[in-house]
Image 1 (cartoon, one colour):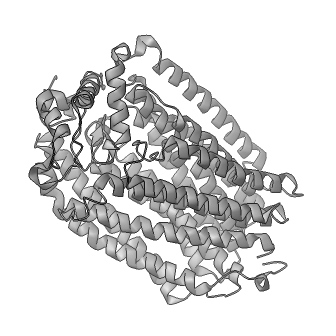
Image 2 (cartoon, chains in turn orange, blue):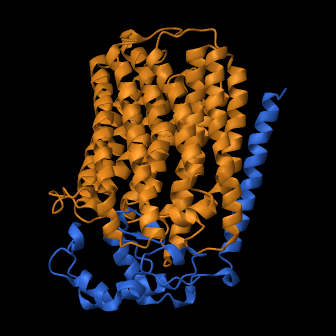
Image 3 (tube, each protein chain N blue to C red):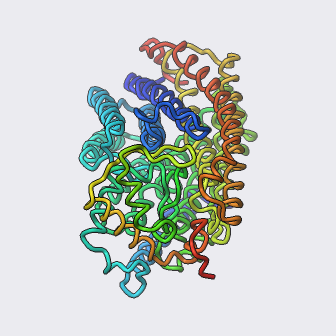
Length: 445
Length: 144
């Protein structure tokens, strides 16, 4: 690392690991409940496990993005963060808000809106926390002598993500209006501004790992984020087909959703092409695996599997089924979880000064988690398609269908065990690296 | 070959244009003449029903308008499928409802809250869902 203040990123990454581990535990609780093993029902009913599972996902990814920003921005801006103590205050307050929300879910204190379950009172604390984070990043950039496209795209993504949180805080009497604006937050985050953040991190990693000229990488970064917004903004329409709003969204959502894979395809081609074009052979191959892997898996998970059920004619039958869970798992994994694991893998040796490149357990972590998640996606997909045919076409009763497809959740749990083994190895590696140290400071990496 | 400034113009131009179209379509969707929800039928009981729905995170197991957790039945057409009496019995049950092995949280609602939920489900059940109402539920009447 080049700046002392980058060390704060390590603690954000540490919190990421903790929250990710918890998220997996709650995932298992849900998986077992689906095969009838719901012994924890009285303490952790399914809706609690579900809210904790999805909210932990959002929080650990955001924590990872923040850590990435604290690591990347000083290097890109060529100066220290303006105030490191406030960055630690922000980290602790983020952890406190997260813990309060999750504890509350176990006592029926929530908002009960998918992905946005945090009660409105706590939303205000989230806003203050994010404003503090943005204040630190923006002030650092404002005082910087250099403002790169990479840092601007990353920061733009973080600012828009904060702004888009606001529509989710408004109360609506109508379930339809509520749903409509909830997607402004959820869809425009994951299929919009989060892709800016992903693009920014990807661009930074490719510059560092491949040695390709910054100007070339940043030019294509603009094209990719351009494609993202061009398709993703109006692609929001695929959430509006069947929730009680005008039919115009069937046409608009259908066309622009079909274009959404293009942005992910461009990202995958971009990463692979830059890797092949690069003359530099960076020794951190594990970071390279996660980086290139993120670009490819995001294309399959978010791009292709998303397209598989966003045509209105298909979505008429798949809307509200496990097909969505199939797409959701592989998309979040490829696009966001893997890019956070990529920046952690890249940053750890630089923060700690321990060059544990290419160790076997690091590679095993990559392959086991990826094979496990692919298996989980296939299990969700088979269960989802079976559900569509049995419930929507054959008109069987909901629970009869659920009992028929329970076997696929046994497969899902087996694959989840493989996935968990991979993530456990990743966390063990994280711990083995030890804490960041000033001795790791270098003038140029 | 594309220059960096052209790439930036593509990003900014494309984003601004699609954002404006998106805002325009949002306004269009909420014009009274395009209302498919019978918005004027939302009364105090329906609003109370939505409050109960949210404060108990029912969406954490069920789905409504196709949105939720896919663990418990879709409730968009639940009144049409099951009738008011059944729905109230489930909500007021003193033991966890668990047909065919999957347990629901025990709510033991009072009459007023159970009636508010029924009003909420009735309002939801009448929304024009662009054809989804035909397939949304195994026992819903096929209106084809």
